[in-house]
Image (cartoon, rainbow, N blue to C red):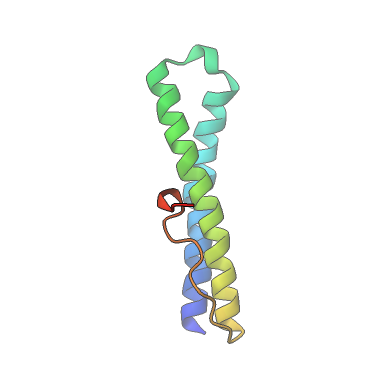
Length: 86
């Protein structure tokens, strides 16, 4: 049960601290693209990939932690999604 709570806490950390904070910067830049340099736009695009990754990974970790608390072991289904071959 403790491991499940750790997973849930880590998932909320990823969502609330990393993904949501990155979204503030990304939305600010993408709302007025014309007033930023290409370097800032590149950084915002890179930060957007981090935001999306942390969003989906946090949901997966929260679900895995919730299942662990209920006694169900789920497999890892979000390992290195950007580097997978189809």
